[in-house]
Length: 228
Image (cartoon, rainbow, N blue to C red; front, side, top):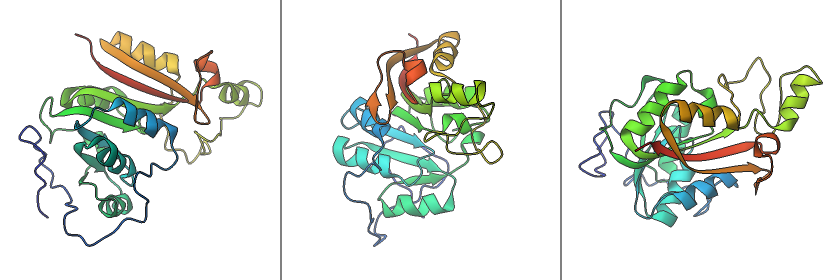
């Protein structure tokens, strides 16, 4: 498949799946972002014309949306064959790769922003993927379910069961989530590793939570970079 030329600084060793001349038209309406409030926050944080790498990009709707409203240039990285096809349908340049193997195919500082949306908790090597995000990107954005949300605490402390919710919909035996954390956990993680948090928003049911966010918020969105 043909290689997509994004910029001289971006040199993936894996071959991107080109979306040019596929003849495939997406079923998703223009600007659609699956009704996800975290996508809207990410869009607000990404600069016009930025170069973007979307890790675990799923069906590519976020990157498609960013291309439409922010004129970004970039790639998605995805492992699922089904999602690769969906990305092509959505006009997204995508590379099939396993994130657990790192981002060796990209040069240092190749992107303005690297995004990992609701995938951090499923990574086996959390420290390594965050380090890689900050190596290839000037800034990074992550979103993840907040394990400190009060209903999760109630289910564990009172009901004695692993929590199941809209943001954590799996049972304990079939969940892909192996490194769940709270908002406070992630902030401590960043502080201990010299990572500067630039912005944070906490949500529940699409609404921002300002009061006691680690207790009342079910989803966290962070923008960060290496401390200067």
